Length: 150
Image (tube, rainbow, N blue to C red; front, side):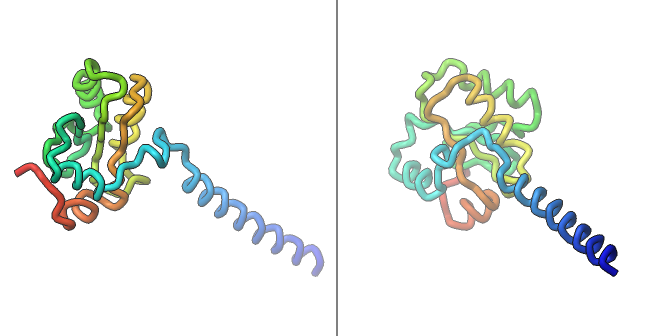
């Protein structure tokens, strides 16, 4: 009886440890951006609406739609589009205000934002941000009536 109890306890602890490690890995996944490098949609919408976005470079690196004044790069998961982004920004000052966004899905599932943000890090930009579309472009931008290209 004692051996059976120890075995059951071992199984329960093992399953709990596996579940916790998968949850912890997922939540602690190292991202190429910091929380300070996330720009809230309300902030960008305000900048665009005030007409003060002339020194702001906005790049769409996903399939979701074009925010007003954004340049369509194409999906960041494709190497040719990462090369296109590189060519677009290569002559910008390293402190240029660059915003990238995708908006196809929640960040944790997005295949486009990490390659694009990593590229900007590797190119030594110092003022680049990721638009914080934590759900998707529709929910976090379009449904709120924020400016889109027509």
